[in-house]
Image 1 (tube, one colour):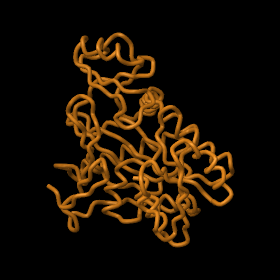
Image 2 (image 1 turned 180 degrees about the vertical axis):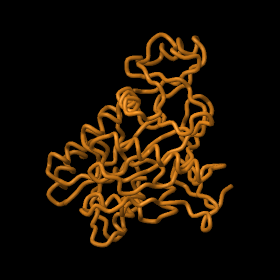
Image 3 (image 1 turned 180 degrees about the horizontal axis):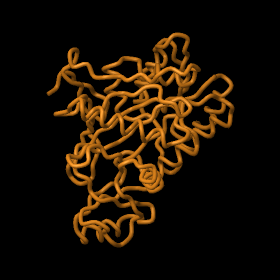
Length: 318
């Protein structure tokens, strides 16, 4: 994901990308690309000093980091305090969206259909539950609890005070990517099917565009809900990912909002080339009040885009 976005940013006219790469991950896949300058680091040994050295050589920054343990909030604030323009949401928006309990309360009070969420305790509030980290990223430490024994076993192996619990919501997991500029929607990308394991841990396997059995009516309903939800969050800026579940009874239900790049970018890149990068760049440079761009899947050009969690792409997959 990081490789795809920085590679595409470097392809944009007039853009020079300076980024870091951890040598413990092996050779950087974009090391020799034109328009790219790579500062090589070694784990946490020389990361922060390298960032400080790069500050006076950059005009703007895009932070790619997970939200758990306040990492995204902290790293974004580090660059914002330096005076750089940032292609990330405000500190307040990052903090709200990273806190699943606070976000669920905010969405409910704003009239957005979402999953009831409470702090984890010794009890199962619903007969069939999902427990997850309050500030988790992806499927981090998620589990489905269907019996009191499941709840007891899980509690004995985790720190309950860091977790929330929700009723299990059956349906089709999907996501939508969007780009904002100072709360204003710049671009909305198509709905992506999320493929998750069925072992009760919801590990991410990849995605598909369009989702299996998807209709234009479903696409519009999901995008309408995403647009409504985005308007309720002050401080959205840059790329934002929305996770939802399509339910037969309720239609789209919003699960979480991620104020960072998400894996759906891999599928969007296959369909729209550098458009995600172009829209991220536009959030730093665009001044005019132009209507948002709605990107759509062209069934006349593609049979389908199938991608895996490791970034591998398959096209024409049914």
